[in-house]
Length: 180
Image (cartoon, rainbow, N blue to C red):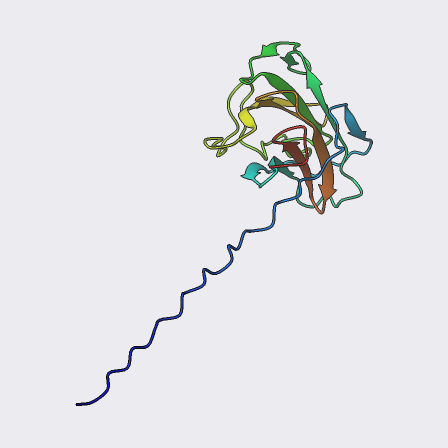
């Protein structure tokens, strides 16, 4: 008779859990008005939005302006009023950011529209479904070389404004802390 050998199976060690590093969100942006003086005759041609881990982003494209010629004013307002007429424009959300870009939304030589926005209407092509911070985005108009947009957000949250090549970028944080 042959001997039977029994081999005990070694216990299987559980692999250590791997967790993704926490996203460190920027802090210190604040909610006060941000302004940069400059103007361009290059027109606004597009407005688009995107979602990031820590903030929602709006980008205003001004091809041909370059970064040094782009000016802006971004601030919280109690109510958005259209330049020129003073007409109030309803914007959804608990707080409203007025975004002014110192560029027209029309061709300054011909007067033809360069951006298809209509005063008081949602921004063309912008769908804010699924955004954590953005609630509404309305075109207010273009008056005396400035394009005006109302950005409705869920609360008066910190924001920053960046000027990159041919665009103004507005980032609104998801919350006041540095965590997503």
